[in-house]
Length: 127
View 1 (cartoon, one colour):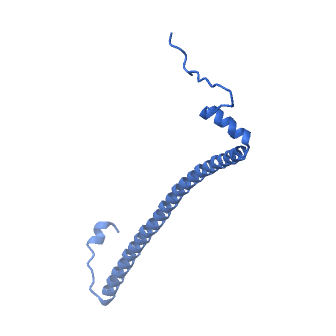
View 2: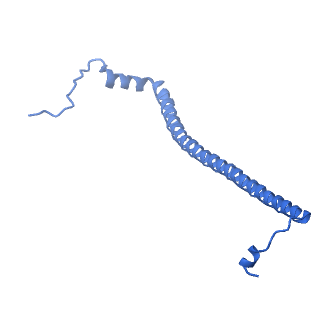
């Protein structure tokens, strides 16, 4: 049978044909609902995975910032510990009377008995 011959066939209005038409419509509706559910599920899955990926990327950025901050704090702590050691050493030296006298002589121009202090300019003469 060719297509022309199929179109010329008359349709019989019987209860079987009505039931068959109803069955076909139900099948189409089921298929349509299935496609809608699949599309909805796909969209939801994409949203969930997209939000998970965005959250992961955000956490990676926060982690990198915190790691950088940790390294800076670690360096700062090392420098503060060195400064603390220097200050402890200076406190120890300041307990020595001879060291204190030497600082007073160099910084504040204190002199020993009978000693004269001359301050020389640190700049080279311009002439």
